[in-house]
Length: 255
Image 1 (tube, helix red, strand yellow):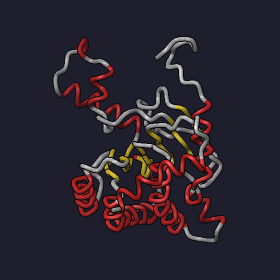
Image 2: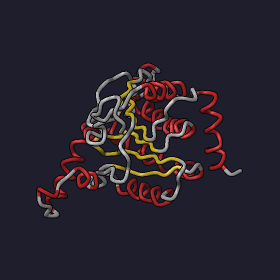
Image 3: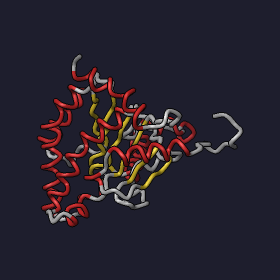
Image 4: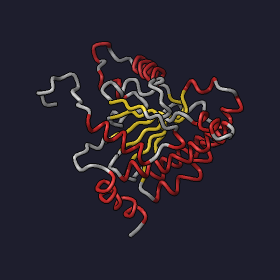
């Protein structure tokens, strides 16, 4: 059995032992990874060490979600507003992201993970962008789970960028609809998230997937991102399973 088969083979055993059989597993889980700095403060570490601990948790969470049957994961790694942070922190985040992609891409590829970047490219360091493109190319045919990294991403900017592109293309106002806007978003081709999880105990969406989250469920976990693990994931999935998603309809109506 190769590593990809082994990665997939754990699904049934994990679901049987960790989750109740009747639970509905979301297809797409999006996560606002919050709490790295607070984790560092609690553990007497530097902010940079906190961010490193956060990046090191990405592979583990990806594996755990895939084991439970999740097929699409989107992680909010760096927002358009994060450029306003102290320059040394921004530089550290860039270095960590570059290192994480360079070190982790082969493991992700071996486990059937498809990597994709969503967000702006123009402000990313050229070497980092080249690594991202290479990772996307290498993993493009993988199908175990898709991992979308939202880096230099902002929900409002994404919508503004889509509208500008549509106007530049000379589209008539009467031809603008939701499907057209969808096709001009960074997330084109990616289904909307079923649930958005925010770690660190906050309840804000923080400019993340504003358009896509219109009917997403929201779950706030008090666990800081570097410590977010198996029990937290199962708690979120259980909460999602107990929600009744109506999409504007009455409970008795079928979607």
